[in-house]
Length: 467
Image (cartoon, rainbow, N blue to C red; front, side):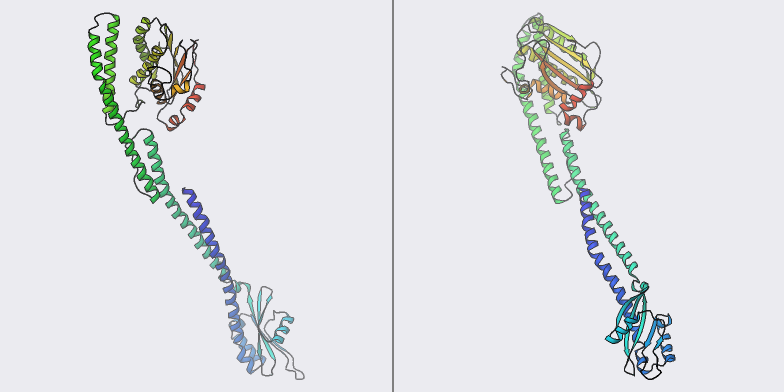
């Protein structure tokens, strides 16, 4: 926008300068010419009284020398012969005009100009006492005709350049003012998209951009209010779980001793902790984001081992074969531990919920240069429509499913610039591939590219499934 305004100002100002300066320059040139010829006419007219009285050569010479043009050798007088026997024409000064031009001017009886070498000659006819016509010739050099024209054109050029520079400066300042306001709105929109809900735009600048800033601020306020309502709703819904959870905890306490009872009580305690975490998070003044802050993260190997220890007990009860690979060494990822735990529990819970008892499953961790891949595979019936399964809140035909488990996993992956893919596993069922980026997060490019950024990284990270 800024350069567009500068270009428009340049074009308009240049056209105005040309439209006025060129005609004005031509007028100045014509005025200089008229001034030179008018001055010559006055010089020639000064000899009129002398010629009307006498045609004596000496007296005419003194009269010619008394004029400015005569003193500079630019004036000549041509007096024809009187017609008396022995009379001859009288010529004073240097003749520059052609003889034919002199004859023509004497015959016509009116002043004329003719071009001569290095200038012009003004021929002024004057009647003398004998009734004949004498001619006064005044020479006008070319530099007299164009005197002051070059200076005037330089002044006009300077004025034109000054106007153009001034208009460009004004257009540039106006463009900066408009671009600054537009850029503030764009930056604020980007920050709002990144989760900084407190960003607002100063309501200043041109009227249109002020209106846009007012609308943006109103939208941001509405977003904050809607998120606050969502948090309150989440907290209220989570709080309603406390009553049945209390009953479940009391019943679990009365189960007695044994592995199954201990596992049930541990699951109830974990569920109670998760509900408390949800309520506290939802009640916080600022909404939480999925991505971990700078320096935060966890060891994916440790989290996988811990969760597999938990789920292995249930797998043993259901006669499921379990395999874990790639967790023998620490692997740091930029995801908070609770978020990764929730994602793994969502995937493993789906395996137990949507596959028959006795179905085998495995969890593999692959560490690359700039990404970590977690593969959760099973030998179940698979997913008929992976695209529909990835849609938030879409449970499809799966009974008892909310459709939010895979969305939780997807949000965790995309918080690192990665993604989630569904496919067929070598076990014959479903394979969920979680791609977690290890590079700098929070850049617009990573968040904006989504799957495309992950595809480029996938070409660089060697993955060995071992199957």
